[in-house]
Image (cartoon, rainbow, N blue to C red; front, top):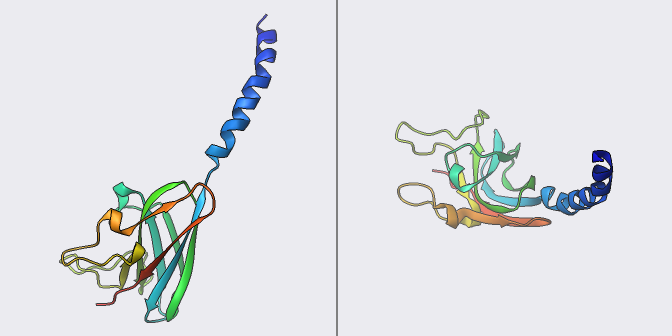
Length: 148
Protein backbone atom coordinates (compact mmCIF):
# COMPACT_ATOMS: atom_id res chain seq x y z
CA UNK A 1 0.00 0.00 0.00
CA UNK A 2 2.80 2.45 0.82
CA UNK A 3 4.45 2.30 -2.61
CA UNK A 4 1.15 3.28 -4.26
CA UNK A 5 0.71 6.29 -1.98
CA UNK A 6 4.26 7.37 -2.67
CA UNK A 7 3.75 7.04 -6.41
CA UNK A 8 0.48 8.97 -6.18
CA UNK A 9 2.19 11.79 -4.25
CA UNK A 10 5.22 11.94 -6.55
CA UNK A 11 3.70 14.35 -9.14
CA UNK A 12 2.62 16.71 -6.35
CA UNK A 13 6.09 16.63 -4.75
CA UNK A 14 7.76 17.23 -8.11
CA UNK A 15 5.47 20.19 -8.86
CA UNK A 16 6.18 21.66 -5.42
CA UNK A 17 9.95 21.28 -5.90
CA UNK A 18 9.81 22.99 -9.30
CA UNK A 19 7.72 25.84 -7.92
CA UNK A 20 10.20 26.48 -5.10
CA UNK A 21 13.38 26.12 -7.17
CA UNK A 22 13.41 29.64 -8.69
CA UNK A 23 13.17 31.21 -5.23
CA UNK A 24 16.06 29.13 -3.95
CA UNK A 25 18.27 30.07 -6.88
CA UNK A 26 17.39 33.78 -6.86
CA UNK A 27 20.52 35.89 -6.96
CA UNK A 28 21.40 39.35 -8.21
CA UNK A 29 24.61 41.17 -8.98
CA UNK A 30 26.14 44.28 -7.46
CA UNK A 31 28.15 46.56 -9.75
CA UNK A 32 30.39 48.96 -7.83
CA UNK A 33 32.11 51.88 -9.57
CA UNK A 34 35.22 52.79 -7.56
CA UNK A 35 36.47 56.30 -8.30
CA UNK A 36 39.47 58.35 -7.23
CA UNK A 37 42.08 55.58 -7.31
CA UNK A 38 45.48 57.24 -6.90
CA UNK A 39 47.95 54.51 -7.76
CA UNK A 40 48.60 51.19 -9.44
CA UNK A 41 50.06 49.36 -6.45
CA UNK A 42 48.11 46.56 -4.78
CA UNK A 43 44.44 45.73 -5.16
CA UNK A 44 41.10 47.46 -5.01
CA UNK A 45 38.79 45.44 -2.75
CA UNK A 46 35.02 45.83 -2.57
CA UNK A 47 32.87 44.09 0.04
CA UNK A 48 29.11 43.62 0.41
CA UNK A 49 28.17 43.00 4.04
CA UNK A 50 24.93 42.06 5.76
CA UNK A 51 24.03 44.42 8.64
CA UNK A 52 25.72 42.23 11.26
CA UNK A 53 29.04 42.24 9.35
CA UNK A 54 29.21 45.91 8.39
CA UNK A 55 31.69 47.62 8.41
CA UNK A 56 34.39 45.71 10.30
CA UNK A 57 33.07 42.16 10.35
CA UNK A 58 33.68 39.38 7.93
CA UNK A 59 31.90 40.14 4.68
CA UNK A 60 31.15 36.97 2.75
CA UNK A 61 30.96 38.69 -0.64
CA UNK A 62 34.12 40.35 -1.94
CA UNK A 63 35.47 41.38 -5.34
CA UNK A 64 39.02 42.48 -6.04
CA UNK A 65 40.98 43.77 -9.01
CA UNK A 66 44.48 45.12 -9.60
CA UNK A 67 44.59 48.83 -8.83
CA UNK A 68 44.88 51.34 -11.64
CA UNK A 69 44.69 55.12 -11.37
CA UNK A 70 41.25 56.58 -12.01
CA UNK A 71 38.10 54.45 -12.02
CA UNK A 72 37.36 50.72 -11.88
CA UNK A 73 34.12 48.75 -12.03
CA UNK A 74 33.91 45.61 -9.92
CA UNK A 75 31.07 43.10 -9.94
CA UNK A 76 29.99 40.90 -7.07
CA UNK A 77 27.86 38.20 -8.69
CA UNK A 78 25.33 35.83 -7.16
CA UNK A 79 24.23 37.81 -4.11
CA UNK A 80 21.04 36.65 -2.42
CA UNK A 81 18.41 39.40 -2.58
CA UNK A 82 18.59 41.87 0.30
CA UNK A 83 20.36 44.95 1.68
CA UNK A 84 24.12 45.10 1.90
CA UNK A 85 26.48 47.69 3.30
CA UNK A 86 29.14 48.38 0.68
CA UNK A 87 32.73 49.31 1.46
CA UNK A 88 35.90 49.53 -0.60
CA UNK A 89 39.55 50.08 0.08
CA UNK A 90 42.82 50.36 -1.77
CA UNK A 91 44.79 47.42 -0.40
CA UNK A 92 48.21 48.83 -1.27
CA UNK A 93 50.20 46.12 0.50
CA UNK A 94 47.96 43.31 -0.82
CA UNK A 95 47.46 41.66 2.59
CA UNK A 96 43.67 41.46 2.22
CA UNK A 97 43.03 43.69 5.23
CA UNK A 98 42.47 47.40 5.77
CA UNK A 99 45.65 48.80 7.29
CA UNK A 100 44.92 50.81 10.45
CA UNK A 101 46.95 52.80 12.95
CA UNK A 102 47.08 51.79 16.62
CA UNK A 103 44.13 54.18 17.10
CA UNK A 104 42.08 52.33 14.49
CA UNK A 105 42.38 55.08 11.87
CA UNK A 106 42.59 53.69 8.31
CA UNK A 107 46.05 53.95 6.76
CA UNK A 108 44.79 52.87 3.33
CA UNK A 109 42.19 54.67 1.21
CA UNK A 110 38.57 53.79 2.01
CA UNK A 111 35.13 54.56 0.63
CA UNK A 112 31.54 53.48 1.13
CA UNK A 113 28.45 52.70 -0.94
CA UNK A 114 26.34 55.59 -2.23
CA UNK A 115 29.43 57.77 -1.69
CA UNK A 116 28.34 57.98 1.94
CA UNK A 117 30.58 60.46 3.76
CA UNK A 118 32.99 59.27 6.41
CA UNK A 119 32.12 60.69 9.82
CA UNK A 120 34.54 62.37 12.18
CA UNK A 121 34.70 59.31 14.37
CA UNK A 122 34.23 56.41 12.01
CA UNK A 123 32.52 54.99 8.97
CA UNK A 124 28.99 55.91 7.91
CA UNK A 125 26.11 53.88 9.31
CA UNK A 126 24.80 50.82 7.54
CA UNK A 127 21.77 52.52 5.96
CA UNK A 128 23.88 55.34 4.50
CA UNK A 129 26.14 52.86 2.70
CA UNK A 130 23.54 50.17 1.95
CA UNK A 131 22.31 49.02 -1.45
CA UNK A 132 19.32 46.78 -2.16
CA UNK A 133 20.20 43.85 -4.41
CA UNK A 134 17.22 42.46 -6.36
CA UNK A 135 16.41 38.78 -6.85
CA UNK A 136 17.41 39.10 -10.51
CA UNK A 137 19.31 41.76 -12.40
CA UNK A 138 21.77 44.11 -10.78
CA UNK A 139 22.12 46.95 -8.34
CA UNK A 140 24.67 49.73 -8.79
CA UNK A 141 26.50 52.05 -6.47
CA UNK A 142 29.46 54.41 -6.59
CA UNK A 143 32.33 54.63 -4.12
CA UNK A 144 34.92 57.42 -4.07
CA UNK A 145 38.10 56.42 -2.28
CA UNK A 146 39.38 58.89 0.28
CA UNK A 147 43.11 59.02 0.90
CA UNK A 148 44.39 60.55 4.15
